Image (cartoon, rainbow, N blue to C red; front, side, top):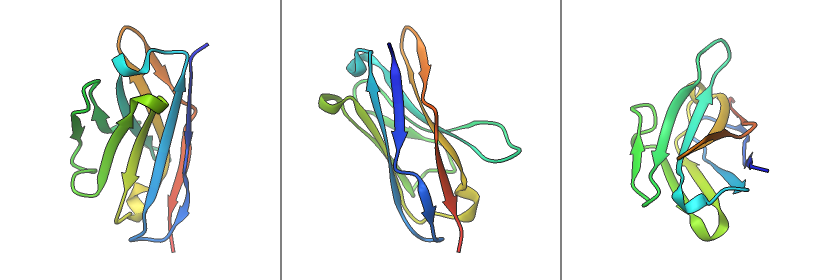
Length: 114
């Protein structure tokens, strides 16, 4: 059974930081491209960052310069370090694994507010 479990979300003040984690099980993690998406209330889910199986990161404009995606294959885990958070970063953050199949986690809420 494949599971992706996100953690690390919460309430943070503007300018603060959070580190999200996504722990995978039931897949050969090292082969998978790992992605972080987010969905704000009333908006479509959008891609935030991707990391290849080889560890190469790519970012959308909303994440560049503030977010860092990384992976630790030995722990079957992908991370998203988020710095200088803004209220517009408020969303549910999801991880997705894709290779031969595509799998999603259940999401973790990030709220940026004073």
